[in-house]
Length: 354
Ligand code: ADP
Image (cartoon, rainbow, N blue to C red; front, side):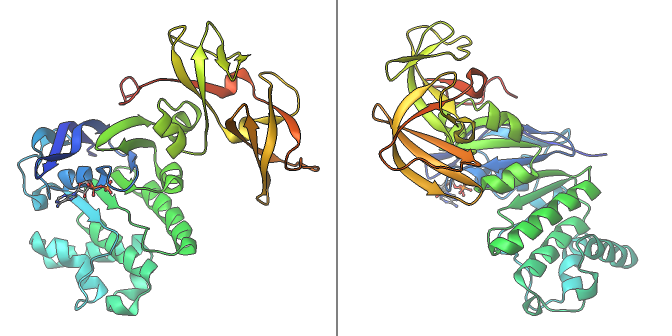
């Protein structure tokens, strides 16, 4: 049986300051949910509320059907991995991995079996008799993951597990974590990160946090293609955010009418139009914008053009551009109506997507 996680209007405050504000969020059984947001947005606090290391000022936390809000951490059935590995330096790898089982008074033979299994799963079987100081950072983090898995948790909490690793190791571990989840499809995972690549790569769904609040929640594709808020649009991928005035079936930007789906946005309202830079084309086309090149960056696979359109900066990422324009050139940029998303002004919170 696998269990999900549910935050039911969970708020946490430190010294009278709310750092997690009425969080409503469900992690489905077997799902990987990333909590993505800038530093200080309340992600770790949310994770610690599930672990039992912080007590909500209000609201309840559920693991499966169980209300665990009043349970101590060791009775919640969770495995947890944090950024700094937190292995016991004086214990060998196998003793580290056995730690949670011992604390639970698991019989010796079963402990040995589960330690072997967890080390096998994480590819660390050959290192059982080493001390943490004899391992690389990536290996230590694997041991920390093995330790979290050894208790066969329903729920795995990962708090920036890759941020202490260098870039190359990080991408290797990312693939490892994805494989691990395929092998353990019943474990629900809450994954705290400020790195959008980690969230986009690993998560089934992403919960976007900012300033103590859930801003948006959806699959990586939903958030990328149809962000609801300016914050999501700019935090998940790059975005042109153009200030526009809503008309009917069209918007006005810099004195030009652009045809885009306006949904239920009120005519006359001010709003923001989100267009991803890689969906902006060079030359004439639908929704053409005339501008002047302010900067050209070569990025290997693409050229990034920065154009000034009536005082607004519009970015275009272009592939296969044989003859990039020069600084100061007048250019026409365009985008397809279906590639633009209208973000209503003042939309915050994640109503409607959960
Ligand atoms: P994130 O994980 O998104 O970086 P945190 O949940 O760690 O954010 O922190 C949210 C806010 O709560 C921050 O402003 C942080 O300084 C504050 N905070 C976290 N832990 C404590 C604590 N033990 N005491 C006081 N303030 C804290």
